[in-house]
Length: 254
Image 1: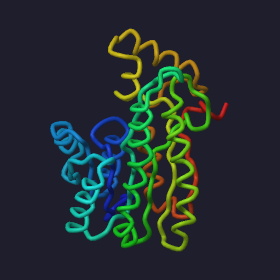
Image 2: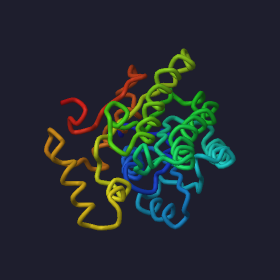
Image 3: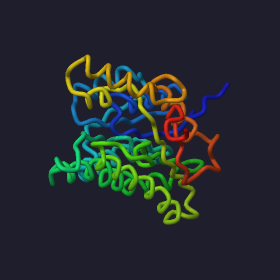
Image 4: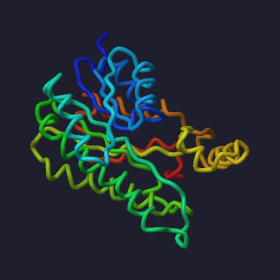
Protein backbone atom coordinates (compact mmCIF):
# COMPACT_ATOMS: atom_id res chain seq x y z
CA UNK A 1 0.00 0.00 0.00
CA UNK A 2 1.43 3.36 -1.03
CA UNK A 3 2.03 6.06 1.53
CA UNK A 4 0.08 9.32 1.26
CA UNK A 5 3.17 11.54 0.84
CA UNK A 6 5.46 9.13 -0.99
CA UNK A 7 8.02 11.04 -3.06
CA UNK A 8 7.05 14.46 -1.74
CA UNK A 9 9.36 17.05 -0.22
CA UNK A 10 8.07 18.93 2.82
CA UNK A 11 9.23 21.81 5.00
CA UNK A 12 7.97 22.25 8.57
CA UNK A 13 9.11 25.43 10.26
CA UNK A 14 9.36 25.30 14.03
CA UNK A 15 9.61 21.54 13.79
CA UNK A 16 11.63 20.75 16.92
CA UNK A 17 8.82 20.33 19.44
CA UNK A 18 5.07 20.09 19.95
CA UNK A 19 2.81 20.27 16.91
CA UNK A 20 5.64 20.92 14.45
CA UNK A 21 7.59 17.86 15.54
CA UNK A 22 4.48 15.66 15.47
CA UNK A 23 3.63 16.87 11.96
CA UNK A 24 7.18 16.29 10.73
CA UNK A 25 7.10 12.73 12.12
CA UNK A 26 3.76 12.10 10.44
CA UNK A 27 4.95 13.47 7.08
CA UNK A 28 8.07 11.31 7.24
CA UNK A 29 6.08 8.20 8.16
CA UNK A 30 3.91 8.82 5.10
CA UNK A 31 6.96 8.82 2.84
CA UNK A 32 8.00 12.47 2.58
CA UNK A 33 11.48 13.87 2.89
CA UNK A 34 11.04 16.46 5.63
CA UNK A 35 13.08 19.56 6.30
CA UNK A 36 12.56 21.01 9.75
CA UNK A 37 13.75 24.32 11.13
CA UNK A 38 14.54 25.45 14.63
CA UNK A 39 16.51 28.24 16.24
CA UNK A 40 18.51 26.08 18.66
CA UNK A 41 20.86 23.45 17.27
CA UNK A 42 20.74 20.90 20.15
CA UNK A 43 16.93 20.75 19.95
CA UNK A 44 17.09 20.64 16.15
CA UNK A 45 19.52 17.72 16.15
CA UNK A 46 17.40 15.83 18.69
CA UNK A 47 14.28 16.32 16.59
CA UNK A 48 15.99 15.09 13.42
CA UNK A 49 17.09 11.97 15.27
CA UNK A 50 13.54 11.44 16.58
CA UNK A 51 12.00 11.78 13.11
CA UNK A 52 14.42 9.41 11.43
CA UNK A 53 16.38 9.13 8.19
CA UNK A 54 13.86 11.11 6.12
CA UNK A 55 14.52 14.27 8.16
CA UNK A 56 16.92 17.12 7.42
CA UNK A 57 17.46 19.90 9.95
CA UNK A 58 18.22 23.49 9.01
CA UNK A 59 18.98 25.93 11.82
CA UNK A 60 16.87 28.96 10.98
CA UNK A 61 14.70 31.70 12.46
CA UNK A 62 11.60 32.35 10.35
CA UNK A 63 11.66 36.05 11.20
CA UNK A 64 15.08 36.42 9.53
CA UNK A 65 14.83 36.60 5.76
CA UNK A 66 18.43 35.54 5.22
CA UNK A 67 17.72 32.33 7.16
CA UNK A 68 14.72 31.62 4.93
CA UNK A 69 16.84 32.20 1.83
CA UNK A 70 19.40 29.72 3.14
CA UNK A 71 16.68 27.15 3.92
CA UNK A 72 15.15 27.25 0.47
CA UNK A 73 18.55 27.32 -1.24
CA UNK A 74 19.31 24.00 0.45
CA UNK A 75 15.95 22.53 -0.53
CA UNK A 76 16.46 23.71 -4.10
CA UNK A 77 19.98 22.33 -4.35
CA UNK A 78 19.02 18.93 -2.97
CA UNK A 79 15.58 18.42 -4.50
CA UNK A 80 14.73 21.24 -6.90
CA UNK A 81 11.11 21.54 -5.77
CA UNK A 82 8.85 21.72 -2.72
CA UNK A 83 5.51 19.93 -2.40
CA UNK A 84 4.39 20.74 1.16
CA UNK A 85 5.06 23.76 3.37
CA UNK A 86 3.76 23.86 6.94
CA UNK A 87 4.39 27.39 8.23
CA UNK A 88 4.18 26.33 11.86
CA UNK A 89 6.81 28.50 13.58
CA UNK A 90 5.42 31.12 15.94
CA UNK A 91 4.06 31.58 19.42
CA UNK A 92 3.05 34.15 21.97
CA UNK A 93 2.80 35.10 25.61
CA UNK A 94 -0.09 36.35 27.69
CA UNK A 95 -0.62 40.01 28.61
CA UNK A 96 -3.74 41.99 29.45
CA UNK A 97 -4.57 45.19 27.57
CA UNK A 98 -3.19 47.41 30.32
CA UNK A 99 0.09 45.46 30.39
CA UNK A 100 0.87 45.50 26.67
CA UNK A 101 4.20 46.90 25.58
CA UNK A 102 5.50 47.91 22.19
CA UNK A 103 8.04 45.09 22.39
CA UNK A 104 5.33 42.50 23.10
CA UNK A 105 3.25 43.63 20.12
CA UNK A 106 6.21 43.86 17.74
CA UNK A 107 7.66 40.48 18.69
CA UNK A 108 4.33 38.65 18.44
CA UNK A 109 3.46 40.10 15.04
CA UNK A 110 7.00 39.49 13.81
CA UNK A 111 6.86 35.81 14.76
CA UNK A 112 3.30 35.03 13.72
CA UNK A 113 2.63 37.34 10.78
CA UNK A 114 5.87 38.63 9.26
CA UNK A 115 7.49 35.22 9.64
CA UNK A 116 4.57 33.48 7.94
CA UNK A 117 4.42 35.99 5.09
CA UNK A 118 8.04 35.57 4.09
CA UNK A 119 8.14 31.84 4.82
CA UNK A 120 5.51 31.43 2.11
CA UNK A 121 6.66 34.16 -0.26
CA UNK A 122 10.22 32.91 -0.45
CA UNK A 123 9.05 29.33 -1.03
CA UNK A 124 6.99 30.21 -4.11
CA UNK A 125 9.64 29.40 -6.76
CA UNK A 126 10.03 25.89 -5.33
CA UNK A 127 6.29 25.40 -4.76
CA UNK A 128 5.67 26.27 -8.42
CA UNK A 129 7.84 23.27 -9.33
CA UNK A 130 5.89 20.77 -7.21
CA UNK A 131 5.27 17.51 -9.03
CA UNK A 132 1.46 17.43 -8.71
CA UNK A 133 0.54 20.75 -7.16
CA UNK A 134 1.73 22.14 -3.83
CA UNK A 135 0.09 22.41 -0.43
CA UNK A 136 0.77 25.24 2.01
CA UNK A 137 -0.54 24.91 5.57
CA UNK A 138 -0.68 27.97 7.80
CA UNK A 139 -0.74 27.61 11.58
CA UNK A 140 -3.96 29.17 12.82
CA UNK A 141 -5.70 28.98 16.18
CA UNK A 142 -9.16 28.90 17.69
CA UNK A 143 -8.21 32.21 19.34
CA UNK A 144 -8.74 33.98 16.02
CA UNK A 145 -12.48 33.21 16.24
CA UNK A 146 -13.17 33.91 19.90
CA UNK A 147 -12.20 36.32 22.64
CA UNK A 148 -9.45 35.12 24.95
CA UNK A 149 -8.54 37.08 28.06
CA UNK A 150 -4.94 38.28 28.21
CA UNK A 151 -4.23 36.87 24.75
CA UNK A 152 -5.46 39.62 22.45
CA UNK A 153 -2.25 40.20 20.50
CA UNK A 154 -1.60 36.54 19.79
CA UNK A 155 -5.26 36.18 18.80
CA UNK A 156 -5.02 39.14 16.44
CA UNK A 157 -2.00 37.65 14.70
CA UNK A 158 -3.88 34.41 14.10
CA UNK A 159 -6.84 36.34 12.68
CA UNK A 160 -4.36 37.95 10.30
CA UNK A 161 -3.04 34.54 9.27
CA UNK A 162 -6.56 33.36 8.51
CA UNK A 163 -7.10 36.27 6.15
CA UNK A 164 -3.74 35.75 4.49
CA UNK A 165 -4.95 32.33 3.36
CA UNK A 166 -8.16 33.78 1.94
CA UNK A 167 -6.28 36.48 0.04
CA UNK A 168 -3.33 34.43 -1.15
CA UNK A 169 -5.47 31.84 -2.93
CA UNK A 170 -6.63 34.73 -5.11
CA UNK A 171 -3.09 36.01 -5.62
CA UNK A 172 -2.01 32.52 -6.69
CA UNK A 173 -5.02 31.67 -8.83
CA UNK A 174 -4.09 29.14 -11.50
CA UNK A 175 -0.69 28.29 -10.00
CA UNK A 176 -1.64 24.89 -8.47
CA UNK A 177 -0.66 25.99 -4.98
CA UNK A 178 -3.28 25.27 -2.33
CA UNK A 179 -3.24 27.28 0.92
CA UNK A 180 -5.23 26.25 3.97
CA UNK A 181 -5.25 27.22 7.64
CA UNK A 182 -5.05 24.52 10.31
CA UNK A 183 -6.43 25.81 13.61
CA UNK A 184 -5.84 23.75 16.75
CA UNK A 185 -7.71 24.05 19.98
CA UNK A 186 -5.91 23.43 23.29
CA UNK A 187 -3.10 20.99 22.60
CA UNK A 188 -0.85 19.52 25.29
CA UNK A 189 2.47 21.00 24.21
CA UNK A 190 5.32 22.65 26.08
CA UNK A 191 4.20 25.99 24.67
CA UNK A 192 0.73 25.61 26.15
CA UNK A 193 1.70 24.57 29.65
CA UNK A 194 4.39 27.25 29.83
CA UNK A 195 1.66 29.88 29.58
CA UNK A 196 0.79 28.97 33.18
CA UNK A 197 4.34 29.60 34.38
CA UNK A 198 6.85 27.16 35.89
CA UNK A 199 4.67 25.86 38.75
CA UNK A 200 3.48 22.31 37.88
CA UNK A 201 0.29 22.84 39.91
CA UNK A 202 -0.59 25.92 37.87
CA UNK A 203 0.18 24.06 34.67
CA UNK A 204 -2.11 21.19 35.61
CA UNK A 205 -4.77 23.67 36.65
CA UNK A 206 -4.65 25.22 33.19
CA UNK A 207 -4.95 21.82 31.51
CA UNK A 208 -7.86 20.85 33.75
CA UNK A 209 -9.67 24.11 33.04
CA UNK A 210 -9.22 23.81 29.29
CA UNK A 211 -10.39 20.21 29.33
CA UNK A 212 -13.56 21.30 31.11
CA UNK A 213 -14.31 23.67 28.21
CA UNK A 214 -14.05 21.02 25.50
CA UNK A 215 -17.17 19.14 24.33
CA UNK A 216 -15.00 16.17 23.39
CA UNK A 217 -13.92 15.83 27.02
CA UNK A 218 -10.14 15.69 26.64
CA UNK A 219 -7.20 17.93 25.87
CA UNK A 220 -5.74 17.58 22.40
CA UNK A 221 -2.43 15.92 21.58
CA UNK A 222 0.07 17.03 18.91
CA UNK A 223 -0.69 13.86 16.97
CA UNK A 224 -4.31 15.00 16.56
CA UNK A 225 -3.07 18.01 14.60
CA UNK A 226 -0.49 15.98 12.71
CA UNK A 227 -3.19 13.70 11.29
CA UNK A 228 -5.09 16.70 9.96
CA UNK A 229 -1.87 18.15 8.54
CA UNK A 230 -1.26 14.93 6.60
CA UNK A 231 -4.72 15.25 5.07
CA UNK A 232 -4.10 18.84 3.98
CA UNK A 233 -0.64 17.94 2.68
CA UNK A 234 -1.81 14.96 0.66
CA UNK A 235 -3.62 14.58 -2.64
CA UNK A 236 -6.72 13.56 -0.64
CA UNK A 237 -7.36 17.32 -0.23
CA UNK A 238 -6.51 18.25 -3.82
CA UNK A 239 -9.77 20.24 -4.22
CA UNK A 240 -9.49 21.96 -0.85
CA UNK A 241 -8.07 25.46 -0.65
CA UNK A 242 -8.69 28.58 1.41
CA UNK A 243 -10.39 26.75 4.28
CA UNK A 244 -9.86 26.90 8.00
CA UNK A 245 -9.80 23.39 9.40
CA UNK A 246 -10.56 23.43 13.12
CA UNK A 247 -9.10 20.55 15.12
CA UNK A 248 -10.31 21.82 18.46
CA UNK A 249 -12.38 19.17 20.26
CA UNK A 250 -15.45 21.29 19.51
CA UNK A 251 -14.20 24.33 21.43
CA UNK A 252 -15.27 26.96 18.90
CA UNK A 253 -18.12 24.91 17.48
CA UNK A 254 -20.30 24.54 20.60
